[in-house]
Image 1 (cartoon, rainbow, N blue to C red):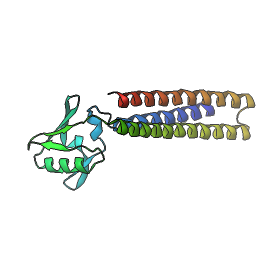
Image 2: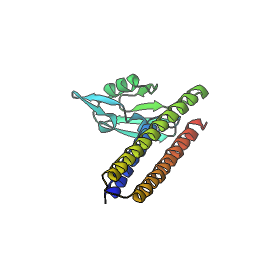
Image 3: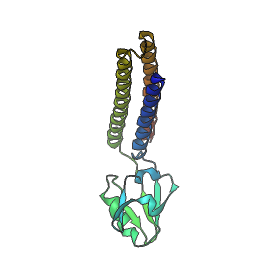
Image 4: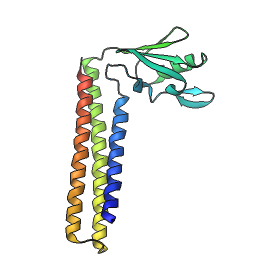
Length: 186
């Protein structure tokens, strides 16, 4: 039962690393409009930093445009300021009712920089996964030292951990390759 608990806890940590990687990569601009680009941007809503998607409707009417329709007209100026301050490099166009964000085509140099960022985030996720495996293996060895499990159980459990680690590292690579392909797509 102890090994199963370690395995389940380890699986959960690895899934969280994959989810975190997906969230991080969804906020990277890949030349295509997506509401996730605005996820990290917050506006001051009556003294509280609030995500844009909680004070406005965000839509993608065209592949290279995002429209933001604030629920309160007073928020339009705040949303524009927040977008300008962000690291997205986008300039909002407003007609007083709707804010339009045109997503320009990425330059080849910018694409290469984004690919490097994607590789770094993927490597960070791999490190989290490997650290999780190491922690699990340490816990398994401690069980053996405490005479709670046999040497054969240790070997099998460590093999299972390695298979689990390999599975999630492959998933990280697949996510990374998909994002890289999306960024390099002209």
